[in-house]
Length: 388
Ligand SMILES: Nc1ncnc2c1ncn2[C@@H]1O[C@H](COP(=O)(O)OP(=O)(O)OP(=O)(O)O)[C@@H](O)[C@H]1O
Ligand SMILES: [Mg+2]
Image 1 (tube, protein in one colour):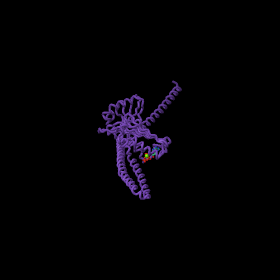
Image 2: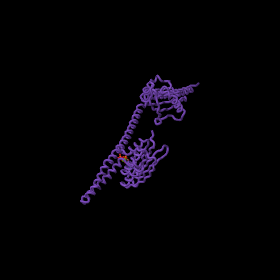
Image 3: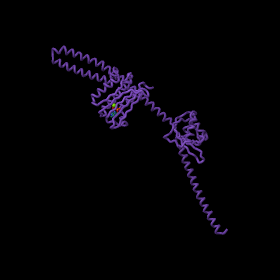
Image 4: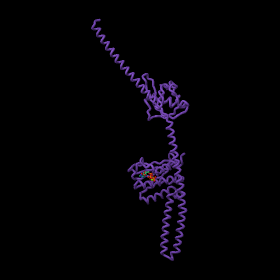
């Protein structure tokens, strides 16, 4: 081999060594980055309050962070290599196992926060707790799947939700109680106003009439004054009757719901001059008194709202019996007025809330549909037999 050839080969060798050195440097850098990134991940895992647990394809625990230790009461050392089942109540282990397997076979890479499922976890001491979990999967280069579960203990939230539900329920019962007390009270006052005051006025009117007969012949000017008094008493009697009817529609008791609504509508039309169409089905048998008063009060409130807020020129009131899915009464009051934005109703107005509570108390529901400029429609559906 000549010197020139040797030199060339030496050069090529040097170039290869330089290339190898560069590759080695790059790989060291990558390794450093990998270590850094692992440290960063470990840092995140250790401060996360959620439990972060990785399992292999056989659902054995591969990683168990500090959050998981705190939530479940195990140390990572106790659980690495153990089946995930230890963290679940026995009755859920089977379905959960197949859920994870199914997820492994499916196209989803992760079931995200929004699709979180609520499950129950089991602590080391055997106690159970409600949890929210999400799962992701990673197919490794050797085709083995690693799942990572992120889980949060939601005991506190659940308790708060339960408390909130209970206090709402309590408020509902209270509202229903207030409505019924109000109805009873109105009934009592109406009776007293009608019977006591009404009777006294009737007697007064009779006395004045007979007095007019006695005195009139002797003193015509006194007769005129007495007649004025009688007229006054008549007007007062009419007012008393009106107040009593407002408090407790006596027609509701004597002639039934349909007559009571018609009579109320008559008064409404007279005082507001709003064109009112009434389409009431004859109910046979009459709905029970609690249901009848509820529907009557709803018509009253809806019409008061029409008069106070709607600027409508036309109102429609419909009441009919619907046989399905269970026999119920459907009351509708709609107007062609200015409508309103339901989201923006005042928090302290009680009319619509009262209607809803009355309906709810009888196992039914009220919906109000309205939009500015598009009129308002109130629909109440109440079962004829109270649902339990
Ligand atoms: N038919 C209607 N047309 C237009 N706006 C309406 C109608 N009915 C209700 N509203 C709107 O909805 C609001 C709430 O009605 P709601 O009956 O609950 O309270 P309210 O009538 O203001 O007071 P109240 O507690 O005395 O009934 C009203 O203030 C009004 O703005
Ligand atoms: Mg109102």
